[in-house]
Amino acid sequence: MTKLLSFFLLFALLCSPFVNAKLERHTYYSKSIENNVIGTNPERVISVYLPASYDDTPNKIYPVVYFLGAYSWSNDFALPMEKRIDRFGVKNQPIEFIVVMLDGDTPLRGSFYVNSKAHGYFEDFIMSEAIPWVRSHFRVSQNPSLTAIAGYSMGGTGALRLAARYPTQFGHVYALSPGVFNKTGLEDSFLSNKSAIEHYNTFRQHYAKVDDKLAFMSKEFAPFQGDKLWDNGDENSDYAFILAYGGAFASRPNEAFGIHYSEKKGAYPKWQAGFGDILTMYMSSSVLDNLNSVVIEVGDHDEFRWITNGCVTLKVASEEADSIVKVNVFEGDHGDHFGQRIEQSMLPHFVKVLSQSTITTSN
Image (cartoon, rainbow, N blue to C red; front, side, top):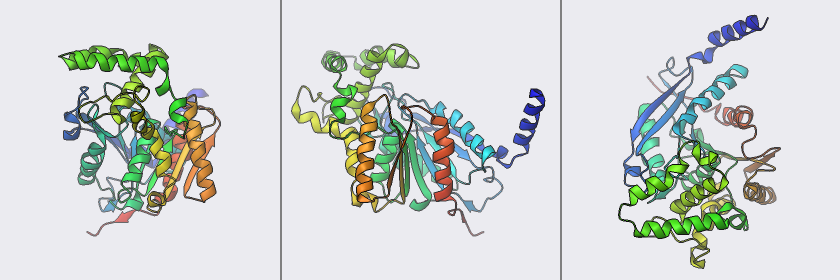
């Protein structure tokens, strides 16, 4: 009986219209990323999920969703994402928009999708290289109301920041469990962990003294690569994260890794702004007036408690202001129900807001 059921499921899958959907993966050499300090690979992978109808409708222009991966995710996250989009098509209907997937992985496991000396200029890579490349190679709309950006965790924060900074490019943003600081968020996070701070300060001291900085960093960052980042314990992953965050947000003109705010009070605004700016941006009418939809999802007991607190702070403020920002709180932690959230929340949202957006070009 089980074999028979499997056969019919396979038959239905093969006969369904979405089976011609495909994931294309393209290597792109980024000039924006090549001159970085820590050895981030400038060869990036741009993964593009094309709807089943794409090849059969050469005159159709498609809405597009740019999806940014989480901290520590390699470009291979596109493979399980492809399966989730396929599964959504089986259970519901094949999507009629293109999904472009980009990662922010670096030797410190996350660029936060901003421009920095340490990781490379990831904001420029996305906005000045990846998106123009996609537009020149695929039939995607350039209308902001037909263009969305989304992401999970670090990618959710990146999506929120880029949507706010480039309102003429994006009309919709969807963030799953994004890093958001309220007023106490920085102090509540592991960026204030004494052990992590000690590691960070020691790294900066050694980094300033060594001649072969790349060799030093290669050895220092070895425990952060692959699954070792998490397998080596919280102290290891906290150390990697504080280095990644400091390199992304706290740099100074002649210093890729800026001083920690515990050592110099004047550095506090930079450390707070990395995740704290999101709250400010999405309470600003100058940002919200240019967006069509903003959705944020967060678990009610995210293990990174400051994420729940930051998102709930935004939820309360948004509801009081009756703004377009919708913060949905679900039962779970940071990674709970990720696949379900993609299939049951994010994709249906984009089907709804982009469903009437397909454009046909003239012959």
